[in-house]
Length: 175
Length: 154
View 1 (cartoon, rainbow over the protein chains, first blue to last red):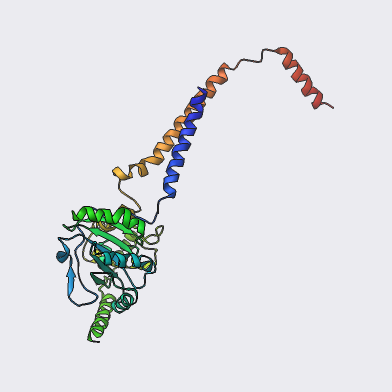
View 2: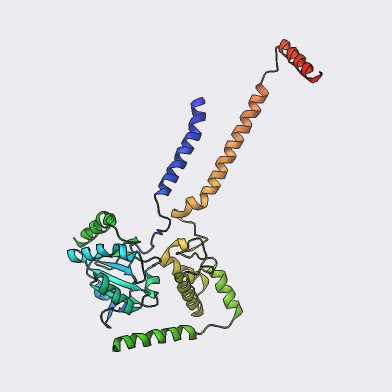
């Protein structure tokens, strides 16, 4: 009887600590995207290096990353070297979405920091960003051959996120 | 250069379009938008409503909500539009479904658990109270009274 009396609060306490422990490790800013498993919202936007629009229709049939960036975005500079390495390794094409940015500023930024993108499209008023549920730049989407969003990284890419999540997923999708 | 001019023109045209956007001069419409926006969460500053937030995304979303509303969409359709992009998190009043039952049911489960515990404790106390034997040792009682008298009357 005595052990039962002690074990109940103890069990409640352990469960509570478990919840809090998991909560400590989670980032409240990472809101799960409802787009995962759904078709990537379509767009047809001018490219940063040419006026010719690029549309989602031209991108179906290949696995690609869509990286949301902007010249005003500070943490984009953190992930930029990784994107350059990724482009150099030619594992997967990376398309850019220059989000709510002056295209001149965007071009200057790419000239200064290097351009890892197969192509970047310009989303002047942030409409396409809203369709993709963008709320914090940078964000990176993994999109499969049939144009389905498979993964969304919120915030800058890191070596861990690339090695543990994105690249294995890309290899899986490219099979 | 031509490209830059073109872009500049485009920006000008867009900003002109934005300022000239036909806004129904209807107070009821504004009240309705205000109410709808105060039920939606801003994703940048997560504890502010769309109506209160000054984040640029909130501005864009308010513009989007206004345009959807002027094009005749009702509140539920506008909510669905935002949920499809940002998830249930944008709603301050999330729907009851498999992933949210703990959120909705949790407080009631805790309340029920607390009430059950309270009831058990009360019952046990009552039972033990009844079973507690009267003080049988009259000697001890007498000694106790003597001590009380001693300290009470100097």
